[in-house]
Image (cartoon, rainbow, N blue to C red; front, side):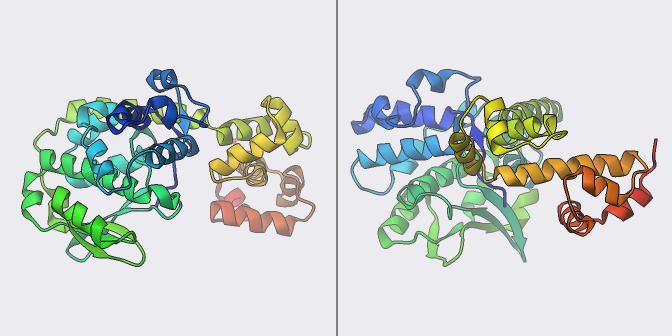
Length: 339
């Protein structure tokens, strides 16, 4: 299961702000306290954080009537053509299996908030949405929106699936929530203690898709790869990692790296936490990455490399290296051709 995207494109939040006036809420009210302006959502090069989108959705829900189905109504505004290159990659895939795995791989380019996974169990395909780390207030809204877009895509790509019973297992089950999903989306909703899962016949995963175009798909995938690389390079984790590598000859600290990135220690710590990591973790990975390079390109001993990587004891270095790379440093050194 992939984790939340660190930085997101603003498309899904832009659609929410465009829909908000229909519910008596202004875009400015949605964005209150997020540090964002409406114009930021129309800048194709701009990125937002997951916490900013969480906050905007919570603002919106706090100002609307309490009822199920709002996520479905807004989800119906998210058409394939507004999902950009990610959407076209899904539509031009050869099979639903490829389409789903592409959606997961390039998740950071999508409207998705709940991390998604595909599992195959017997004769069933399980599409799982992980809402466990989402604020409880927005979970049903997110599930409604995700399910609506999924079924809109499905009806376009594999209409025969809609003739089969589609079951949705959910940790968020209430009779009213289930009734809304059944009435509006045609799902059979059942409670589940652990996951939020769309259950479909496994055989449908390999059905040919009518809009498959190998040439268009290849172009889409190349652009998706480039866009996702740009997002990753702009993340706080990537910037911190690069700054650590540049200072690794000395003793990089949280304070020194924060100064390099022109931010405070507190802000840097918070930004890294939003991306599910810490300064200590990135420092460890940077040191081990340098050690990996030395092991594969030099004849230095493991003890010498451990010292260069900042370890007082080779045994500690060996344990950390094996945990990170799945092999002992000595074994890697012996099997790597040296220049």
